[in-house]
Image 1: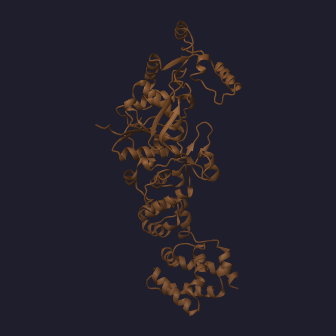
Image 2: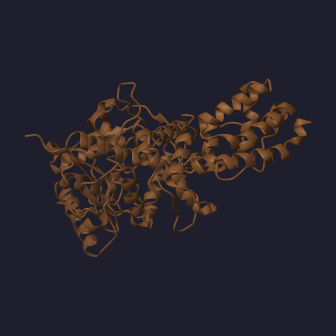
Image 3: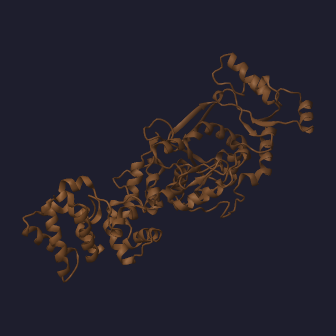
Length: 512
């Protein structure tokens, strides 16, 4: 009987969650749901020196905003609680000692100064990568080199020590990655990693393996930066006797800078003007503020769709996917091996598509939310008409007020370049006639207004293309926008008359 698919997202609360981490969480979620399995969140906070207040809550809030729902977590609980590694601390030593007793790990009593001396000796000997390994351990102070009674005395007297993994000297370690195929590493390239630190806390390597085993994780989907550690983890599974239940590994490609040169960082986002975090973040120590996609106006469903395509593709031309469609289409096999360039313009494009797909009644709420700050009242019906006209021209919800303010506030300035080219005595005369005859329209709507304008222009020997830009700046102040007749219908007869009057006065110099 096959095991239930169980995946985990296991971030450290050391600061805001990077967009690459969000993508890792998303791929875990899509895979788990596609396979009818479960996803859990585990907080890996064993390094208390790097713990940042608020970072854990930020992780919860970010996943919730993205629509990534968890089956087990520190918040939701579950059969394998607790889900914070710091709360699981007492058990890790037992597992480390199990490895020591089996001859797969050892106590190391070296001081920081002795470790530095060892590294300097190796550098002087032209060793490319100085490390504590199967060769150098023989020259250090550990339970493999010290007499047994001295080791016992040191332990009993409370001498500081770490527990290191005893990596074999000559062995080829193999694992099959779901994205990259077979990966082979020679054990001589792996150092004797610390498993238990001198403060009694486990390192990532030990805690990660123990927790994945106890939490019955079947698939480990994580970033490419963990690929060099994977052979070490394979050794740990073997030494614990857990090879039969070892999870399958999938190491995701890096998110690259827009130019493709290197991993995407916060500095890149700051330099190029886009966020690299899902939500706003304020550093609790420095007070430094970092922008997030949510507050910048990105919709969560569009953001998730964009993220999914950073390294994965469905093998079809389809680009717009709901979360349910992503789950249905997702497969590990369609994740690429090479890094993916980050394209903020594509993120903006996705946001535009998702905005435009929303009902006008929903979009109207974005506009209505901005109006009280401007001291403006507006009915929902009118707001719906405005957003219906403007939604093809906005990227973010906040753009509705920015781009549609002329529906509520008459222009006080006009595009001077258009005025100089398009405003003329003939146009001004036709606009005055048009303004005067608006009062006689029995029905005031876009169609009747256009019919009247065409009649006036014909009488004056003008074509609509000659005057439309001039009339547009008279009514809106800007040279481009949605259908002008629809704008006139929304702003109303009296406001249209008043705006034409104001423009005839203010732009009179161009009609001379």
